[in-house]
Image 1 (tube, rainbow, N blue to C red):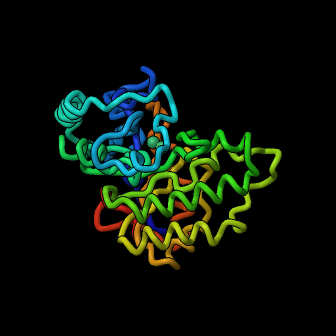
Image 2 (cartoon, helix red, strand yellow; image 1 turned 90 degrees about the vertical axis):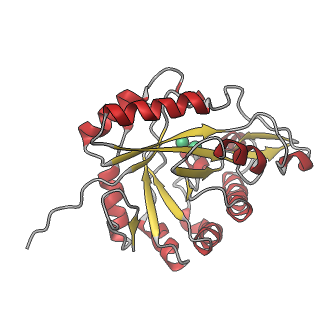
Amino acid sequence: MLTDPPGLPADSHVHSQWSYDTFGHTSMVAECERALEVGVPAVAFTEHLDFADYGPGDAIAETGIKPGWWDAMRPLDVTGYLASIEECRQRFPSLRILSGVEAGEPHLFAGSVAAVLAAGPFDRVLGSLHALAWEGRQVNSSSLFRILEPMDVMRRYLAEVTALVEGSGAFEILAHLDYPRRHWPASAGPYPESGLEEEYRAVLRALASSGRVLEINTYSPLVSATLLRWWRDEGGTAVSFGSDAHVAWRIADKFRQAMQIAGAAGFGPGRDPFDFWRC
Ligand SMILES: [Zn+2]
Ligand SMILES: [Zn+2]
C-alpha cells in the first residue's frame, strides 16, 4: 500500500534583509512569497546576532580575545525587524511566520545575547559557532584551513561547539554543527566524518542532555544518516530543518533529500506540520 509522502517541514533558519550579510539581495516579503510557492508550512526569520565588541556579562571580556571576526558585522535593528515580522504576518495569513535569531558564539556573549532577547519576543533561537580564537582574536573558523591541518581545524571547531553547548542555555536549536566543513579543502580528500566520531558525539551528547534540537542545515553538505544515528544514540530526539537561506530561492532548498536522510535515521513528522521531526 502506498502512503502519501510527508509534507515539507518548517524552514527554521532563514535570513532576511535584517541580517547584515544579505547585502540587499533578499527581503522578508520575497521569502514569504517563496515559502508559499514551495509549500513550507512555516518559516522562521533567524537573523544574525553577532557582536563586534563585548558588553556587560560577556565571558569573552575576560579572555583577552578580540571580538569581531568579520568587518561586515552590524547590530540587529530589533524594532525594524519585529515591525517587518508583523507586516508579513498580516500580508501572508496562511503562512506561519516565526521570529528568531541566530546567536553567534552565545557562550562568549551571554550578556549581549540576553539583552537582545529581552528586547522582543523571539520564537526560535538558534545557537551557532562561526569563529574560533587565533592569535588573540576571533577569526572565521574556515580561514584556519589556510594555516592548520584540516583535521586539526575540525577538531578545534567541534571542541568549541561542545563548549558552546555546555556554556550557553540561551538557544534551543544548534545550527550547522560542523560549519567549516562547507570549506573542507578538496586537496584533503573526502570529508572524514567517521574519523571525527568521538568529537561529534561529544557535541551531540551535550546537546541531547540539555533536551535541545539538532539542525539539519541544507546549505552545508548534507548530514549523513550515520551522524543522525549518533544523535539518537546520544539521546537526541528531535531535528529541525534549516535552509540557511540568504536569498529567496533557497527557502526549503534540498529539504526532500534532507527528509529522506532523517527518515532513514528513524525521524519523522512531529505533532503537527509546524513541529520538529522526532523519533
Ligand atoms: Zn551561521
Ligand atoms: Zn544562518
